Length: 175
Image (tube, rainbow, N blue to C red; front, side, top):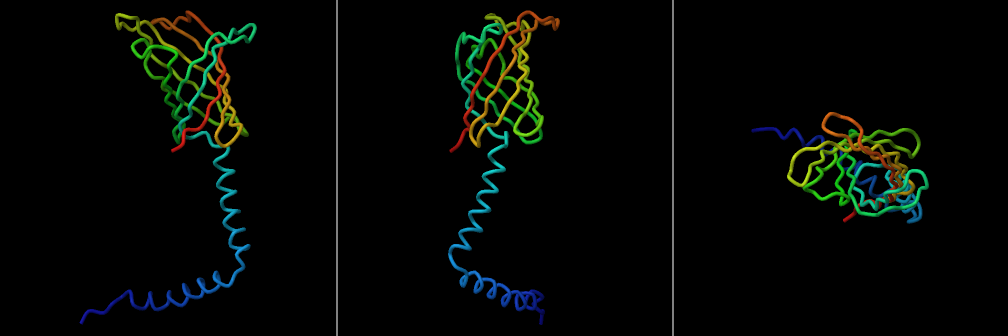
C-alpha cells in the first residue's frame, strides 16, 4: 500500500490556516481596511512615478527662439521594462517616417531621459535620412508626463540638416 506523503504536511498546515482565518475574523474592520489601504497606497505611489507603459501624447512643435507653438499632433510613446522605447507619431505620414526606436533611463527623482531614432523616406519611398528625438521627461502624476524635446533631422551621410524644439503632455493609456 502506497503511503500518502502529503497527509502529514496538510495535517500540520490546517490548524495554522484555521488560526489565521480566526484571527482575521476577530479583527475590527478598520484594521483590515487600514492594511489594505496601506498596501494600495504603496502600490499607487510606486506606480505614480513609473514611466513604464504606453502614453497618449499631445505634441507641440515650438519655435526654439520664442517658444511659440507652431503645430500640434498626437503621438504614442511606449516605455518597456529594461529601458527600450517605441514611438509612433502622426507628425509625419507613415510612408515618410518609420516608427521611432530608442532607449530611456531614469535620471533622478521623477525625471527620465530618452532618445529615439527613426528612418525618413521621400514620397517615392527612398531612404533620405533619419530623425533623432532627445527627450527630458518628468512624471508629474501617476498618469501624466511632461516632455521637452529636441528634434534633429539628418541626411543619409549623418549630416544635420534641420533641428527643432517640442513639448508634449502625455496621459497613461489604460483599459
